[in-house]
Image (tube, rainbow, N blue to C red):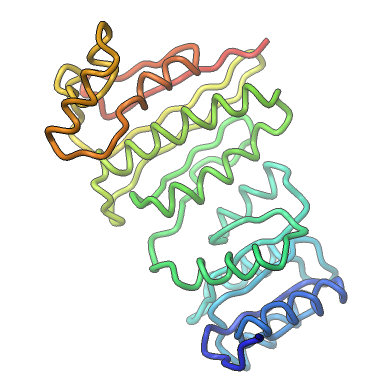
Length: 282
């Protein structure tokens, strides 16, 4: 049964396609959101001046004022809604510009109604945090500063994953696994899940290789002290499971071992608070 409440959050849908505006508004209204619409960036500014919105669903390419130009204008606004960019343009340039302009999330469209509602609820319920900062936005050299939260790490993975869409699926999957595992290690262990601290990410794309560098703000670790990890028990693949059980830790511990199997080079600095991994391309 459709909800009759409108206190779930105010959402502004900005898209030059009339059908998209109508369908999106209908889906979100039935879910209990108060929804406004605008056909381009200029109309969105008028709507935002008249009323505060909690979230804006924003298209990129629109007449008069596009989505990226609107994001630039919003930088100085006193009350800024969270912004989810919905676009079919997945070029690295567009993705990185949106992140640099502090878009909260980027999502490929079209998007299924139930997925859209879940996304809106998730973003509205997420706690405020420092934005992902873009330090370099060249497609062959991307550098980012990321808050030490799991949520920021999840958002970042979606962006980084779009930089390698031209590569074979098996290569993309291997790189995505390695990046996710090492990023979460940096956020959780190096950054202690402290949103005021940041992890620095570098992505370098050369003709014959991919290189990722992840530097966390922690003091590092000693590999021999990771008795709860499979990599420290090369002759006994299950001994670390006994260690984890005794320490009351969740099942796991295969992360670094699996990363080494999926990439070609895995190199830590002396303190073990920075790591580089390389995947060579045929």
